[in-house]
Amino acid sequence: GKQFLIVGTKNKVVDSVARAAIRARLHKFGNLRTEQKTGGLNRLSKRDATMLKRQLSRLQTDLGGIKYMTRFPDIVIIVDQQEEYTALRECITLEIPTICLIDTNSNPDLADISIPTNDDAIASIQLILNKLVIAVRFR
Image (cartoon, rainbow, N blue to C red; front, side):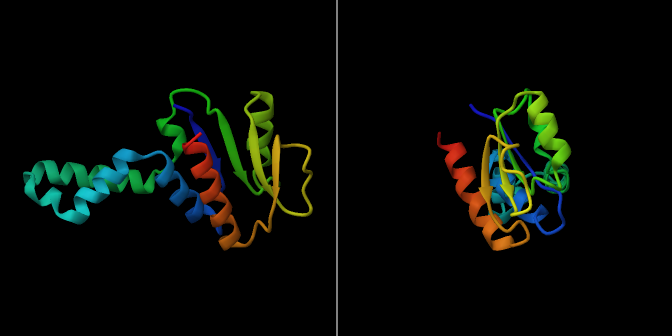
């Protein structure tokens, strides 16, 4: 029942953040994609299939975890502390625990948990996000 939010807006990390969010939170999104891939949408009427396809498209483009949250997240994962400094300040103000992926030129004392990484290396960000998502989901 825990909710978490992943923040990352750098062009290099947006896809990684979106993939992690899809795996972690949007079961409906996953179910719709499965139905589409297995041909389940073809068994529906044209009107219903079109509505579901439109909804799937909207979920893909508007994949902002905030829209689906009914309360503040229990934890926020921030990719690149310097780039997302405003989000970090908001979390500190609202007393929301944070995990930050930080580069060598960042202050590790600002976040509750700091993970040093090269925030420009997509592979390392994906690996760390995958591990964090698994840890948060099954806690």
